[in-house]
Length: 413
Image (tube, rainbow, N blue to C red; front, side, top):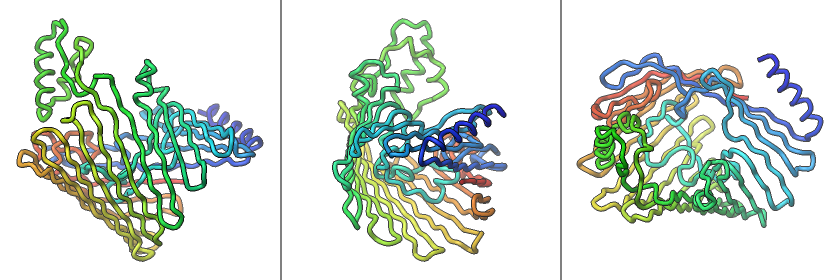
């Protein structure tokens, strides 16, 4: 470890002498949950808001003196080992209007529409159609090659090709590429449009066919689960050697997205977007419409809300809707209140609605850290997940009340 720290320090010194701009930053949020319940059993655990556990992570950015090249490196500690996290990229500008990016991208084009509040930064219940990061427009991240073109200050065109995803065949690589454009209207906001391809060459949306495996019991379980997704037993499915089966059927083609972010009103951010998933099978296509806004009523009081609607084009399917609302209120200079409530309505008598809520307090520990305590609850999630995540309701207990008392420890610089 001492050798690693010394190497990083030496690299930073060399970079400082050769590059004009060098910056280091970190943000980490851990949620130790000593007590929680899935409605039947008591639980405990520790996660980050996004579901894994990374007790330490940091990012470093370098840019050349002439602004023609640079790199970003993300490093974290996960499961007791040093690992990387996105972004891990380097970039080159052959001309001022063109930027070529290589690596593991993370909103490298800056096009994602984010509206993060409330339980998004705590134990995420995930009972929403669209919320948080990319609520109306995605980041268009890939592991591979990206090109950003800015013909004018207002117009941005971007393309990503996933060369590092392991698709192998050239046609599959381009079948998973993405492209889009944004146009910023000065003093008003930004218009966005894009297409994120996801063509699998007939590997999605079909049936697994038995091709000679002796595990007939496993095959029966697997095929039955596929025939009725509502009864899908992940443990049984994952225990089957999939090499014994072939997969045929129609494929997903990708998703078309369009959005508008309103940023020209003081203290207000609002976004509206639509996404249409294309599929060779019309029954597998779907339309999603999402909107959200946050507004600072005063310097100490901020509100946010979002809503999403989804309609599958599958025969006999019902539409679904989710919405949420939350507040952030500074009680003192150091103590703040955070709360939100979220609900999903499937509009179908065969499915249950779900409701979740959060009430928490955050205490600022100096200028770079905070410590919080919250109470979160949910009913109707109908999913099973890790003990430290709010998704602890078992599939057989969708009507049970799940709750948790997480501690929120956050640090940044």
